[in-house]
Amino acid sequence: MIEVKNLVKKYGGHYAVNDLSFELESGRIYGLLGPNGAGKSTTMNIMTGYIASTSGEVVIDGHNILTEAEEAKACIGYLPEIPPLYVDMTVLEYLVTVAELKKIPKKERQPMIDEIMRTVKISDMANRLIRNLSKGYKQRVGIAQALIGYPEIIILDEPTVGLDPKQIIEIRELVKSLGKKHTVILSSHILSEVSAVCDYVLIINKGKLVAADSTDNLEKLFLGQNNLELLVEGSREAIRDVLKNFKDIQSSDIQPAKEQPGSFRIQLQIAGEADIRRGLFYKFAAAHCPILEMQGASMTLEDIFLELTGAEKRGSGRRKAARQASEEAKA
Ligand code: ADP
Ligand code: MG
View: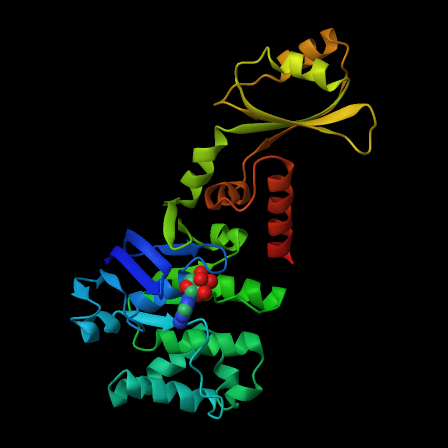
């Protein structure tokens, strides 16, 4: 349905997109996830024919976006990072203009626009000037223009950026409902958004694809990597000696516990499904190092994201960053 092959976009000596390839099937909601500057907008601009790639190919429903631009573009509705709104028009005037530009037959225009305004819930705003709308409503108008002509594929570049929490929830619900009739590709730098809305995630970083899988599979893939966090009283040497007994420990991080002098916070990454909690209990007890706290933590999508994009090193820093990222997303 959508094929992206070896896409490269160079700005001077800098690669905004660096050999990106993926194939998307119809009827799903895809999330293009990556930190700021990862190349999401560039990729979307190339996929929609807004800008040309340095090399590589985009094929939409069998049509090359460059050589059969008209056919390819007819399959796509696009909401770019900065919505192409004419702010001195009313919502209705603007949507009529878009319908004309998209060459929708005159008879079909009004019923189509009415239906789309109902879908994105802007019917009440039809005669308002776009410049007077709130950011959330402007974004809805932007989505409405993408829907004109009912293209099979809807591409939305960070549709919730800059919106307040209530508007974010509403736009996410809208995107989900669009997914029932369209193939949707949305970009986001917020992991919880992608995992809440999308069936399938493409993670890009520095212009490259670092992971592509269903939201469920990505979580499962990393579930095997169990993490344990402990607070243990004793010396660093004694703790190290105890940990040496466990071959399933892949990595350990031992830091003095600030709030509990004479104790250490230990982060363990454990292979596969191994459960070493009881073993740890007995061995630490035998070494006279009481365990004050022990908790398990499977990797969340946040952890996976940070791991894959190398945003933060393993250990507490990574977890802290993950927590911050998820709090940011909730805010
Ligand atoms: P994202 O949408 O993931 O935040 P972009 O696709 O906007 O990332 O940008 C990817 C990289 O390409 C960034 O490093 C950005 O600075 C660079 N870039 C994007 N557009 C241009 C441009 N017109 N000229 C030069 N560099 C650009
Ligand atoms: Mg962007």
